[in-house]
Amino acid sequence: MADEAVFVVVEVLSVEDPAGFQRYVREASALIGARGGELVGRGSKPVDDEPGFGPLVIQRWRSEIALRAWFESDAYQPLNALRQASAKMRVTIVPSLAVSGS
Picture 1: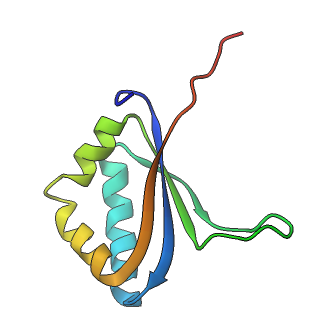
Picture 2: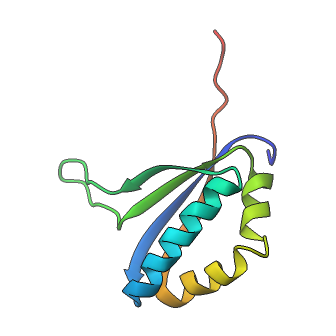
């Protein structure tokens, strides 16, 4: 549901403009915190002989509504353009599991 906590997983596939990408990371990270999101993980380490992922970033948001408000905000739009120009990424929303009280 849109009002339950969600995680966002970002896989960085390639970086075409390292300086632009570093600027994006710095400014987007600050904006995530200011809009109620939280960075909870960064990096990637394969398990044993399993194929790995590219570098990952994991964010936690209080709701999908909060995530989309950040993503669609006027403040994020220039950063989104910078992201698209500087790197190729895959982004997905992962719903949080309800925790049982039993």
